[in-house]
Length: 268
Image (tube, rainbow, N blue to C red; front, side, top):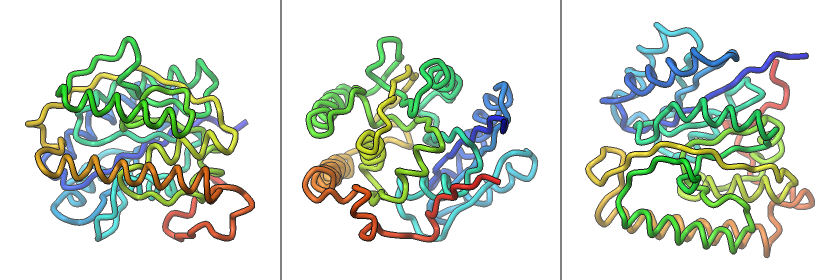
């Protein structure tokens, strides 16, 4: 039986000031796990020195790979790009920037094994999560959670935290169907997984500290633009899922194929 390999994807964009610190913290946590791991940093556009900084770290740390592309394409695309490069039979992603405590990786892995899960998502709504973030974000987050519950019937209360674990088999079936590359990537992958029969989706606690002064926080006018785009993309996912049946196996010929995102079935 093949040994467990865990792949961790970190999407990064304009993180030249923090990327080495982020990678170091995550690598320290992965080194304590009882499984072999690989850490894949995906640089989502060469807008600054994030690529060079990450590559500098990877040269000194076995098990760390850095990949990327020149033009910024969005977090969802970056995660899928990393997943396409991953060799693990358990594949996860975590946001860079460290608003999320990376110790959550260990916590989600424990939940993943305990439940025999298809997917485990970090959740701000979990009763033992430790969450510090502005009240405006809290209200919008609850509203979005209600909306996605109504639209997609997911059992989880929170879909948007940037920390999730997947069985490889889930991604093999789901990733070729996805379209969203930016704002509603999380809800699309969860909704399509649920639609294709992967019902064992569970939540795990996280620790988040997000303030409007943080470098990774979206603020001001851009914040409301982002909210609008998330809602627009979410409604588009609903339309494709419930009305067009785009994600159905019968619609396979209409799926958009991108060779850079081709998810390999054989791990090797």
